[in-house]
Image (cartoon, rainbow, N blue to C red):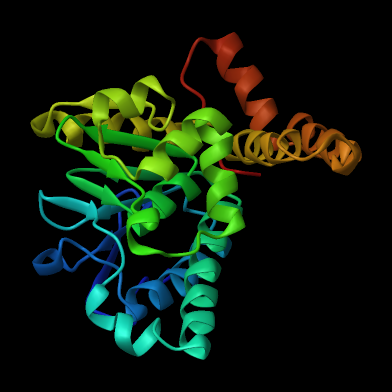
Length: 271
């Protein structure tokens, strides 16, 4: 297969493939502003995901922030006058952010947010759009929209409610308070916590598991969870049945059975 080249359109978003080719890393690279999201950073995400969607090697996409102080500290407020002060600019900025976040949320393969330091505003939106969130013990989370007078998109609010429930979502949103990693885990916002120096090892657990597990089964599970979260009349049960059939009819299922019988580790190809 022809190798894909993951090159961002801006230096403020770095991207690279793991050595085994199974994990695409997308890193927000604006540490001088604590990785605050600028227009070019939002625009860089969808093309990278489009490449990863069609690259059969990619089993997982990991989002992180450059440096040790922040995942993403929110929007780059230096651009507010240009991009968010006028009505047309607000519409363009919101559409740009929504496209990037929807691209992460709807991406068919697993996504993971690896969080250190500040995870504020737009950083929360990126993290909540991912399937899995892990964080260092120094992480801090907040949605400061109420302190800034910003409108909060339906999709972002729904992601928050789906993760932590309506009561806690209103608590965090109305107060705009900051919470630490321990409280974030207690309310279901993140899955696991690690000491900062152990984050690389914790992330490796996920990259290794996703590189080894059957990708057809994992993608089917992600798609079925998305159906479960829909209102009951909108659930596509036939789609769910078709995804399950595809797992059982795959070469990976046959390989999984053989490996179990032969007492060895399976080698899944995604076919």
